[in-house]
Image (tube, rainbow, N blue to C red; front, side):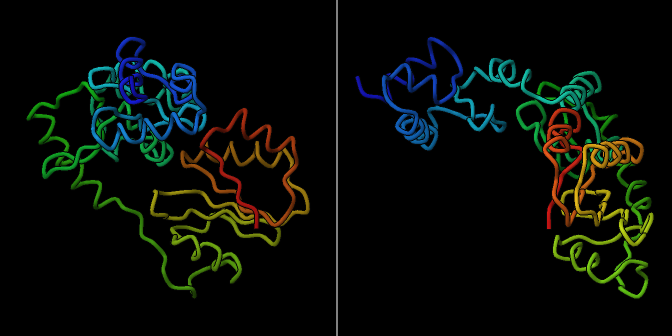
Length: 257
């Protein structure tokens, strides 16, 4: 029996699997197993998850989607699991119903959520949810209100109370300044609009970034309800990285100059 046939048999009998599981079943290395799986995906015989476990996708057959979600769910961050549960309860949420941080997270939850884009509804729904006509009309009204509430983006350099270096960094990120919250010699906090939503851009000029700096950035993310980009010219300590990994999830992103 060829590798492809054996792989299909494995998925049919054992359910969704990672490449390492298929490699073990076939008695080959992971590289070959991934090649076999990729070919089956291209032929439409096998599907792969949108989210990875570690650095590997989950491969499955049609009809095994629930098992895929069961595999992925324990590997989600606390914030992601809470968001999935909210969608499970509410069914559908528009961008106006979500915080900027949550709007960032939904893009990573494609196995649980479905993006909705039509003339009556824009947002995301839980995979098993079917919207009602009344809700579609209410969503259209919310979208019209949201358009009027969009914050005004500052585009002219002369309106900035920040130095050129920070302005150039934000500009290089294909982002625009919405509001300068604070601007000091050693640090600045600026609300920016990026292609992925709103972020709090924190620019820190310090020789060393500690876990305390990450903790403060995390608190800013919680208080302002937006994810943080911490841009620094200094060295990031091991404790700072460990704190970020353990506590902050996707709410704090460290970018080193």
